[in-house]
Image 1 (tube, protein in one colour):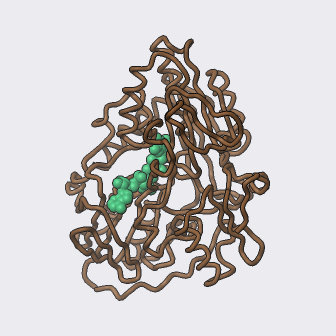
Image 2: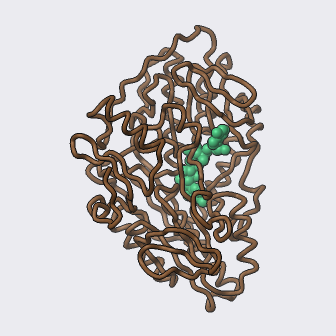
Image 3: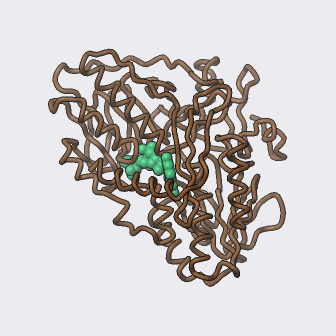
Length: 457
Ligand SMILES: Cc1cc2nc3c(=O)[nH]c(=O)nc-3n(C[C@H](O)[C@H](O)[C@H](O)COP(=O)(O)OP(=O)(O)OC[C@H]3O[C@@H](n4cnc5c(N)ncnc54)[C@H](O)[C@@H]3O)c2cc1C
């Protein structure tokens, strides 16, 4: 392991974040880097190096050798979907449409509700109420999908079984769509000083804090990489800026963004970064790229970083560190990246019939960066997996493949949004095009939200 505390390797890697610990394979290539030491991930990576030294060296399309599935009965298949978020919901819906009722489709989620996470940003500035952006997962019964409201505590992919606190559930096909786990407790001072921008409780607290705010310095901070939806913290800053103007306290306030990235949305390329930096400048939002965050110091209300004096901030909106869900870390499915490795086109793990979609998987692109965590990818990946499972069950050829296409809206506040879309599998760099801000983009984002919350339930 090589320590990179002075950041020299970081500049070479230019991957938009600061690696403190790095694992180098026998071929001299970096196979894992993290902003801190995660024992489980490192152990898995080291074990993998000994097992299959040539694997995991990046590049666009690793060919996983599937572990054959256990014998399956000839009666109706049991398809289990872990997680009723973006990916799980789409997979369940598409599978149900493609398969006769004799095949059982079950969604398991520890939360009773599906949350449309994109709308958390609107919730944080009072443009949505909590009940407007959630739907009960039990309503999936109306679509012929069974719902179990329990946490999954163990996954045994080889035995075809998962365990919850009350039962063991056998599956013939498994779709893992557990998303990313947020880990604010890992950051010193988070609970005392920062408000979580990425969950419903946090955005409710942000709204209350903004209502009570009477001017001062607001900081939006990305505490660690990777994080889901690369646009979201920037959109949050712009929405807050707009909110402060509407409240008439903009002139006695400052809005700052602190991030370990070298530009906004590095995955989308320098032109996108430049365009978004200009948008921030236009709104007089102070941008702090390559910010080497250390911890929050609630005693004096500062953000401590290794690049200079602590930053005094009055209101902190924070993106917490993201991790693979705990159950993944102990399932044997976690790859050296700390996430589940899958085939880039089929989304199958190294176990036949076991797929991982959305934020929980890791897809390394040709440029060495990772496919961003975003609902749009969870959605398209879910469609591919549903198609492949249904084809296998129906005795057809499974031809569906994920092609790396995606898009996103970029909310600018004041009822306007920009839009960007492209193909992330293009080599050597993703090809992403940004369309200029329009009210129409904002309206189409609102329409998409309405469609999403109505269509799947
Ligand atoms: C503020 C914000 C704004 C965003 N905006 C956008 C956007 O504009 N566009 C976009 O494309 N993406 C956006 N995203 C990202 C998008 O929401 C996620 O990438 C997407 O939801 C990932 O889908 P998923 O199915 O992988 O996981 P999730 O949707 O997170 O679902 C995971 C599910 O698994 C459940 N779960 C987790 N662990 C367990 C367990 N042990 N047992 C049982 N259940 C469990 C969870 O309760 C959850 O329901 C945004 C995210 C945030 C936070």
